[in-house]
Length: 155
Image (cartoon, rainbow, N blue to C red):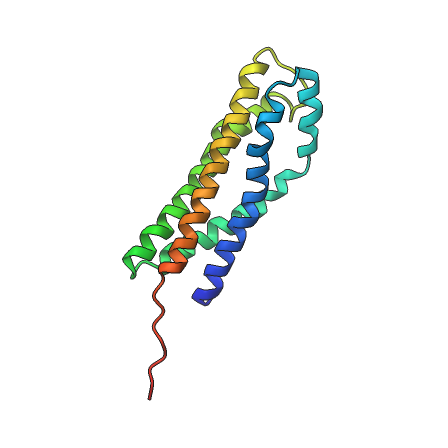
């Protein structure tokens, strides 16, 4: 795959993945004061959002490819590696903080005894992940801008 295509896909997939991640972060202040029943009802708007995982896979592959292809250009490589690493960290954050809360609450259909802690864990996990995705996008854009293209030789 040509380098330009990899850069384009990396930026586009990160921007698309930032949409659901950012939505969770933006919704946080509005959801903070909700009672448990209302919170469970509101959480149902996220049904089907697991499909965003497909965009995450594309973003992980393309940012990883960008880092690999950038390895001969120190600055572009470092920025691409930060982008890839930040995206990996966001995925780890999801599986450490968010996913267990989803499982314990039956995807927000029941209130277990540890509900307040799970709710805080879920919201914090999404907030951290969103900031990491934003960092990944910024670093990846900067990596693409730092990329030095060698012009075709003039004959």
